[in-house]
Image (cartoon, rainbow, N blue to C red; front, side, top):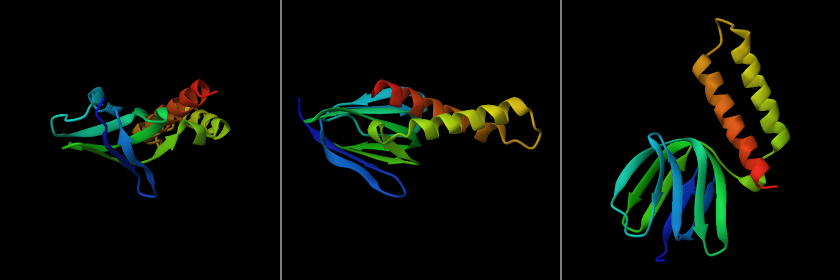
Length: 134
């Protein structure tokens, strides 16, 4: 398969910048894949797992939304946050899941429900990815 460049950045770091054979990303409308010489497009990313295949094998990342640009033989992902499976702290993710679930269950009128639901989705994603890596 013909390789192309994938670059993944967050506000705090460059997560990945190398050639890949394929990438699968969590779009707002569902997951999508990109191959070499793909038609150009922009996509809004949702919370989800990113998967890409490079010379070293398949890698997985937890993404917390952002944007993807496919242009020429280059895919650029600008994510709110991104963590490799190996970087996920399962205890921290479980604590975040419990806090978010508790906020939702409390039915406090001062709770920002959308924010609590997003935190719950992110923590569950991170937990699921950390379990598959072990």
